[in-house]
Image 1 (cartoon, rainbow, N blue to C red):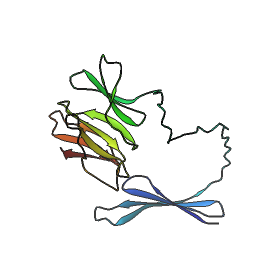
Image 2 (cartoon, helix red, strand yellow; image 1 turned 30 degrees about the horizontal axis):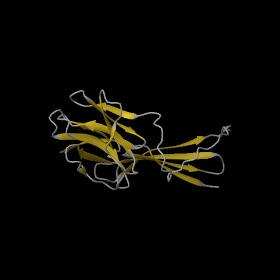
Image 3 (cartoon, one colour; image 1 turned 135 degrees about the horizontal axis):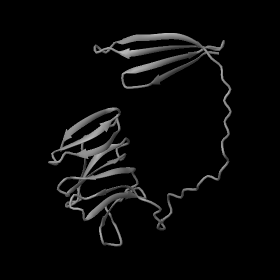
Image 4 (tube, rainbow, N blue to C red; image 1 turned 180 degrees about the horizontal axis):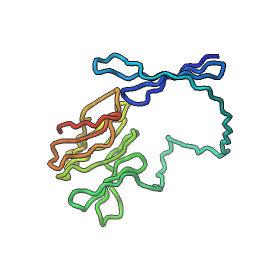
Length: 187
């Protein structure tokens, strides 16, 4: 039996593993040259066998009723972020964005959709929130104007996830991560 595995270890190098029936694995590594062509960097034979024992626990699967209309109890919040003036906290709970004015008992829900959300970050002037959502099919950074309620994708992409937005101190730039590359984008 012959099995072939291609593993993308980084953005610039790949490992190819050829598993032969005789118990010998052949590994090769390729690295991208600046011209875009591939350079074969390493090849070796490794005789190897191993027995691995795995025990999966048996547990009752949780039932999710996504059509249920009854309120759900919040058991935790995700990614709380204090506003620049220190009077409000933005956070994610039950897959929605909320803002809690410090001193109030009830937060205000500011999104009302079924898409994934994470990482709200306040603009330095406190008028916008940058956050990540998959409403375009992949995670993109969105800007939500808290005064008008208007929202827009900062730099729409349908091929690479955008995560971890961070504002510049003057509010003119947002840095975010795409795969393993850090980018900045002017607001």
